[in-house]
Image (tube, rainbow, N blue to C red):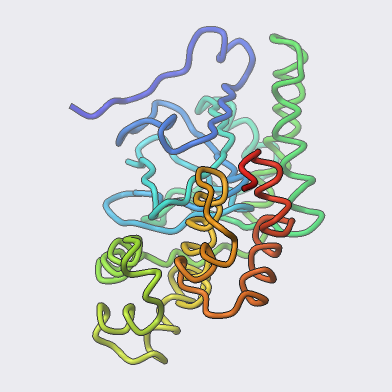
Length: 276
């Protein structure tokens, strides 16, 4: 039987619940609520299973979950997410909608919940505002703060451009799964084209549409994560790591590694205490 989550007495007293989750492993299996929820993706990317479909979620996304939405989260390959979830009662929702003088039918009429995406200053601003819930004293202070924030957030959901709900097809998930294997991502784009059985142009369009990455960017992320693992856990020479991971240019490897991790492979290895 599917879980239907309920707010605790303390959360009702506070006007909201607040959960900070740092991995897909900390989230619930498929469930519904007897309350509303909005969740914000702080970092990373994952699969959001929502009402029978799969959608990519990534840092900057804010999604409004309705009580009867059925949802859960899954890893997409080796990526993970950090997220903040805030639950609030139907009464709090109705009061905020009434204050805005808005028609709530728009929120309930779609198959999928509303999602907006933040970037730049707006991204750090909304993150801080949601995080500040946890810094408020339980009771009146937290409830008062949350009610103001909820009005602001619902206004954004009702007035700002919604993210298109792009559902990830199974064949893309299959390619991602296969290319998550070391022997495939180290072999590179040629191997991905063999697995996908479609042209490079078509594959690039689909990866951009569903994953916001090109196939080459996806492969490089996998290779770089593997390189970081080798540098932190073994005694291999950096040049050997470069070629084992599938890069054929040491300078290109250095450039991409620094772009991904903020430091050179040498400094990364120093920081992990595994210098040869």
